[in-house]
Length: 190
Image 1 (cartoon, rainbow, N blue to C red):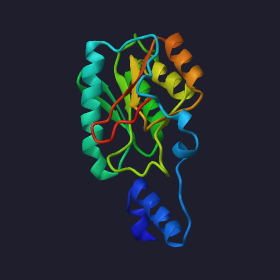
Image 2: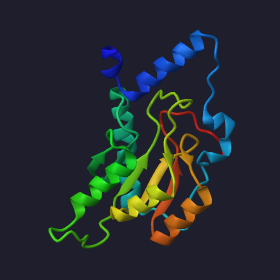
Image 3: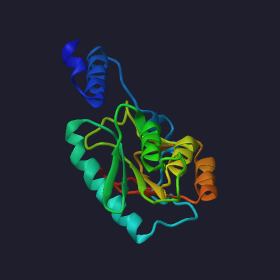
Image 4: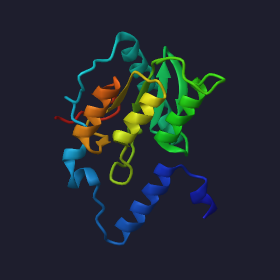
């Protein structure tokens, strides 16, 4: 048991899948059963990321790719070439609340939209059958509350819950929402 506790979540989940498969069970991912929930490569709201946002996305992807070996978070927040947060055990929404807290004035009010991007993507080699990165309307609301400019997610490897509402909310709150190819994953069409 101690050995399992000392591993990251991806390793623990892989172990569970291996046990099931060794006992003759076939494990399939939700993305195989509901592929329409996956972010298509063509995903984008009505707001486009700016040049600073594109640089933040590239830096965030480099960061998440590098962190994959350590089996930690699927998300990071990058603003003006600075890493503001890396997802920990609190999950994406908790990380965004942490960023919001960092950005509040001593009176508890955020002064202005400060920019930055939430980058959410599968880890290198992650078993998507048991751990699929996911966003939805709540994630968009948390990103807006943290003063971010937008959200970039892995194309073909991230679920979007309530996709139409998530896009509408991003537009309504003034955030871009875009899907990006992950350098470490085979591109999916869509």
